[in-house]
Length: 358
Image (cartoon, rainbow, N blue to C red; front, side, top):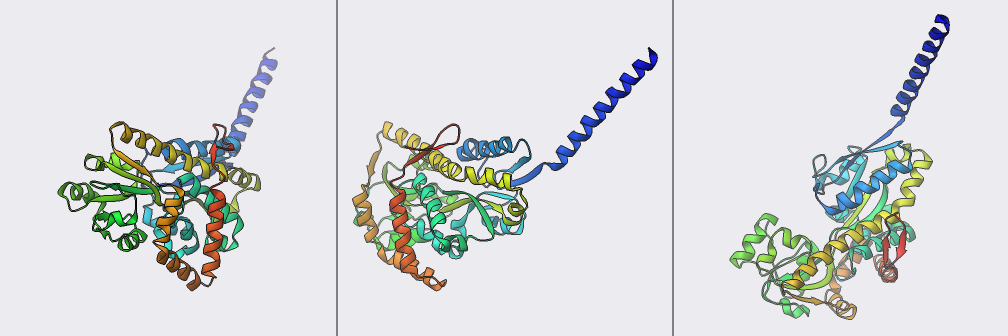
């Protein structure tokens, strides 16, 4: 009897040790991904898209992949993104602000030219489609694996005293122009590009040294620009190119079935980011309408007329692409075709991460 109990005890201990050993091996086999984002922790794209996407990858991998997130620029600042992802400081950059390195990515930048994109979802789809169809873009982006195609929030025109309907409405207006291309547009339209630090925009609007901002719509309330601004032209002026990327060496080290998970989620992630920005836009625009702000939405025909007024900027971009060793005019024409075709594919992502026609 005692001998039997002893044997049972030995068996139980052996099983426990065996399970423990297996658990240790499994833990050792987990693929950790150090993921950096400059989005603040509270940002809807981080909380409601990137975190769930990471969790879905973990789930589909049966726990073999584990994300460790570093939000708020705590590990990598925005301007460090390209060197951090290519140098292996991080495994995932979500997102990489390609717009901050636009001179190194002239073809990608051509997708995001002024008055060309209608929404952030349209931007995501355009970048995704262009990447699939244009080897020139894949070559430009080599050295990192793109697993999500996206944009920043698209800037619109937000003004204190005028509701801009035509380019001539900006004559003499002092505007914060969003970026370097915005500076060029402002000059062509007769506006006065006025560059101040982000932290000084509110005071400049209050003191009257700024008449308006060309800025993504959702954060204008967060920054309290709406204290002074009551006129909004929704035009899809311009957006910054962004992408969710994985370090190339890390990507190459992943098992093929793990790579397949990321590949299958690339389009859903891209559309989900665009959709979330769209929801944010719809919310703040609804609030602005409720309080009685003046809102004007440019038609496609009007946008084409605005775009024609800044043709020199498109010509300059084509020249930059040619200087990089490509046929700039041909590439610009191809991109504009892809963007137009992407406009006919309005999409949304379902709760189970399926892309469906909207």
